[in-house]
Image 1 (cartoon, rainbow over the protein chains, first blue to last red):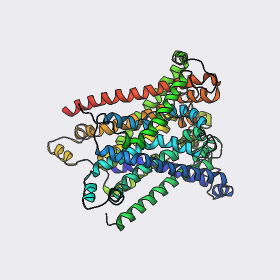
Image 2 (image 1 turned 135 degrees about the vertical axis):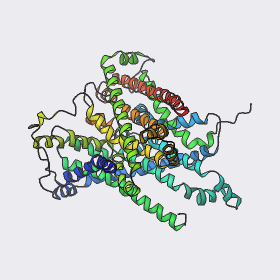
Image 3 (image 1 turned 45 degrees about the horizontal axis):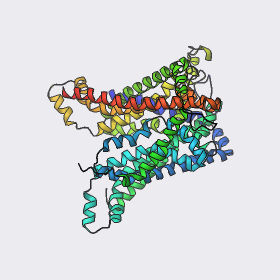
Image 4 (image 1 turned 90 degrees about the vertical axis):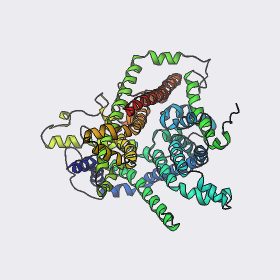
Length: 261
Length: 289
């Protein structure tokens, strides 16, 4: 009985909204005062697919700058995370706390000052500027994930590989990196979600020249085209889920091949 | 004493963007709030924009409203998320698989959640349709106004839809690594279910709940998307004040927007430090019992 209550609550909170979105996308004409959609059709989907140019451009752009953000945050944090996990020095706690602040303070507080500098540097209205500012907003998640993983891993695997005659690069590439893959996947998923979901930073720094899927949804929300809004929202759910499932399968296959699981 | 030097070289890939982008952005915000580095000609540094912001009654109302919305949504999310996380943890293993649906709320961006809230709670939304069909509210005007009513309820609903799964995630991470022998010991010593939860489980969940609260509270305090789509214009969230001044008013007013941002930054850092210090003290006392 207790478990039924749990499942009902989860269902009402998280499954019901998806169901409503599916129905709304299938029945673009469903509106007040009908409790149930008048009839499902593929019209909404056909209508959206008839002119998919802007939608696909926005979606592609969002996926591209989000993936670039993941890559840049890995480049920023992999070395430092290994170092922070291994070394202790004076003021380390303070430094680690400071390095996590970009995820806590409102993005507006630094991005609006930055806007001015980016205009001067020619980084405003460019994808490079967008990726840079998104990386600042999201690298703390990658850093946290990698630092924790490196701490759990400890120095022993690396020492062992070095003792067996591996070069530092071999020890990193063939021993440490495979063991860090789950943490990279976890950190990367969060960073991707943060970048993919962001509206304001892309709007401010991208200035309209870098299309975003969130920016595509914005005017749809306030318009009366509920069917399109529902479909775009469903895509927002489908793209990350598809990516995460692919990632999971790839990782699983990789570990099975290497006999690590 | 021989002090090891700060290991700048190994940390450079992180310290360079931290200083060159994040800290530099903050500094530029602060400088512009003092009337410097403006696109227009600027005079000497001045604090007048701070006085203008701090002296404005409308701004104080915005601050109170922002604090109210963030506090209620963060508290609501952490309470509901902890309860749901605990309930999911109690599920038998095969049912736990089904509980992953909670991640829908983690994946959907705030913009999409705002759309869902409008779709369900608007005066011509689903609930209104339901009320119409049941004869409770024959016209949209009879349906109680949930959104844009001046009490921030629409924003609170949206933030809770995003925040509850986040709190669940944090709490479940602790619960799944939980040593169940502690619970068996408590039961053997004669503790009831409620007492076990209060004195054994809850103290171990508190650090995760504190983290979730700080993150959610500060996010709602300074975010843009939800207030832009679901916020009322009066009193208006602080981020909307900043946006209005920055994009819609005279360039001469821009330092005021920057002054609000500088004050928001000061508040978020102070809040984090004070909250962490207080939480540590309270939790330590709880654990000694």
